[in-house]
Image 1: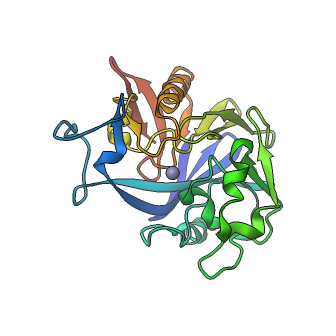
Image 2: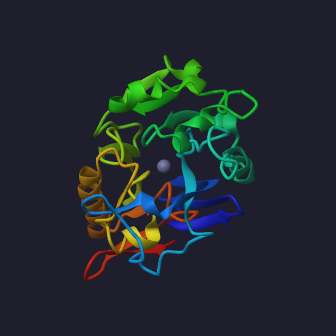
Image 3: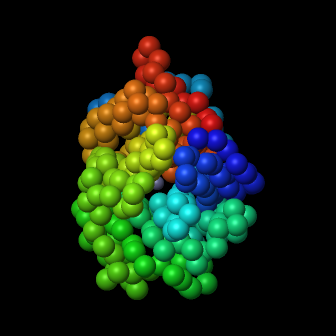
Length: 269
Ligand SMILES: [Zn+2]
């Protein structure tokens, strides 16, 4: 996997016969108390100094990923449009910077149905983000959650269930990774012997959670399950030399993982 182009809001890579583009939707600042040690215990003065703070807050990148096999483009997550904070919603700019015509995006799949992943279906002015959308895949366990988002009502009936182990195309299959949310899903992208795992919200604060994967997130639907899933997927990626792409890894959020004595280490690509 190698980098082929980059700009302020996008970075594109070749992986085998595919082009994968990291698209920067922006960032979100979160209070330190979102980080949870085992037992749902927040950090105080014991927050490790390696975690950078911005006015006392954690800063999370928000990224989506486009996978182009030459015939069609599958977009995994869509950013948050104008549904949350003004520090997000840059996905349309990122796509235009990457020279990805929105009309070519016919498949959209979600890792899970939180705000910062689904609302890019609709632009701030109310138009469809992807006018030629033909397949919208939502983790089956979260279809009801998706259909409770009033802003996205025109998509409620178009959503199709996404299941563990489902093959979206010759190159993309899903892996069930519940914990952060009940239907949280990773996408394994393979071409010519290289593999990339698009892992959504497997972690939120990379400066801490590679080193200490036991640290969870206050918004995890099930912190214990999220912790176990994180360990399983980190081991899978490290032991098989997978590349990984994370929704909240620092933009562009693509790299490799290795094991350390106590945890894992991320090497950005
Ligand atoms: Zn998220």
